[in-house]
Length: 227
Length: 229
Image (cartoon, rainbow over all chains, first blue to last red; front, side, top):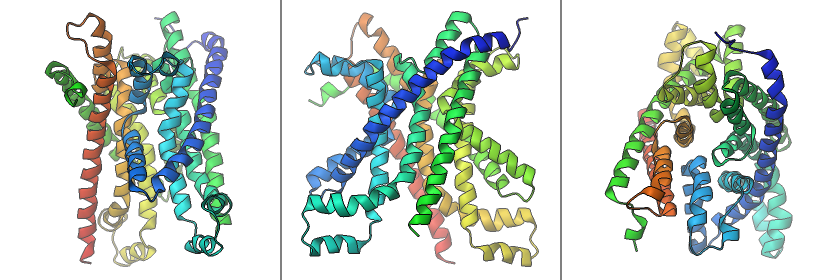
């Protein structure tokens, strides 16, 4: 009977898995950039006083949040290229682009809720003072509301960043060569499963547990400063 | 116009069969996840440090590892580690998702129990209730209205997570769509791929709305229970 765990094999494949992990981290970081920017845009659209603006934003956010990321990735990867009126250059995306847009848009909808809570927590007097000082709408948002709202949105945003990292291996389903994809490739090449998937899991914990701790420290600091 | 957005009845039949599998996975994961949430949430507040420590290790581990990695590990690595041959994909899916859900749920349960006013605990001690009675009849019933709203959101997250089981060969809703897409080239009545995936997304949206509404009903009931007191 073959050994259940082979150390020599485990050491041999670790560099490949780390390389895959770095690609997973890269996709996560790019996704975070997209989610942070798009999320703010969605939060502002959702707050619009014009119903024909705010309703579509609200529906879009609800729709994206209620459906699986994996299915959204399949939609972007398999369905978009078949939409006839879109030019090929827009509709046919590489696996990395698909994954970044997929997790970026998915979590932008979550981030928009974090921003919304942050904006709502700005005291009413600040809004009234801006009106009393006759500030322009852009000045009010850029210099009064957002500088106070964004620090309060940071802890929930941080939690979503960690969640994005945990969802990024789903890119394997659309052939993005992240850590899970590497593990599966090793599985079909060497017919071994225990080492690739176990090491992938350990690498994951090595990144995600410190990241989660960092977010919790941020949470305590923001709670302390806003007291 | 509307007809262009619909599939034919055979395809809907297949998607519904897949939806039924998805529903089985969510029910199983929810049951296991709720059991783990209650046990681990209460264990986090235990007086014995080693029980608290054990629960903390479980929570950190099950939250830190991603559901999809856990799923693959359980399906491919676990049976070999224990030398049991293979694991049915449905069982692997329910175990991974339930295990993952339990870690998030435990934190919700712990927070809710801690938010019950201290006087309730003191009164239970004064009334000479055992620890078990205090938990069952005093603390948990009052924690339920606080648990329900975040627990509803968590359950919808797990519903979305069930799509992952399609990657370990279980023919859930997502996998049925993947199979239809693959057979489309040789199919006698080919389907528009964008329309196919839009239909799948809408089915998930409906399932999520059903869950959200059920939790709203449960929240109202729980609120009414305490309204009279």
